[in-house]
Length: 117
Image (cartoon, rainbow, N blue to C red; front, top):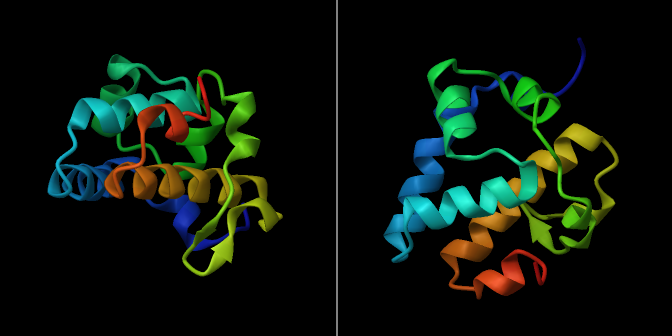
């Protein structure tokens, strides 16, 4: 299957970086999991399974229990690219997750990160 090489990176390999980023800015793993869960529908057990089985990002998002319909409200720039303008759906989902983690690390209120949920 064609696509960017990031699609084949395991969720397990990036998750510790997300944890470090969140905790380094005074947030918890639970808060991080809440943000990822809001986006994808994964609960704690589902996240642990994705980590343990080292699924790639393509599979992580393909098997997401319930992508949040409000994810389209995620706007802004990540890695110099506006997330709302990304054409590839999988790349957009990955960048949405990156953006939410960045917002958590920057100290944005959880109600804002979760788009009023």
